[in-house]
Picture 1 (cartoon, rainbow, N blue to C red):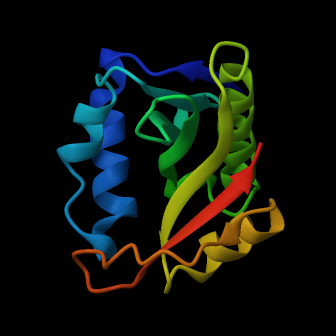
Picture 2: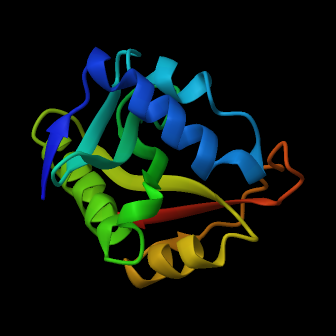
Length: 154
């Protein structure tokens, strides 16, 4: 298995996997594929024999003076055929590496993410990789789930 940067050729894969993986939380069919082309968003595809997952990390200024940056794990998804084999953990660790590598150019202080309170597998994964739930109110997903904000210092 290896990671490669997403390209325009991955748009269909990202769209189809986003539709399936995030359906309980809202309609991400068109939003996530568009984000692959947004400056400041880094999308990586996990490939075995074929694409089997992706992770998307955005970089944003953390203060009005634009003196530091945080990385935001915007999406992480694994194809059904690849689930249950640690692929999500490998994608998450790759996102951490991407954020840490960006520290050579920017003062990236933490990696953040948002997860539905009902997504127990994801919550467990994120907690075991050092993410903590923050106190901020991050609203709700379109599916009605409470959106929990988590963070991990880099």
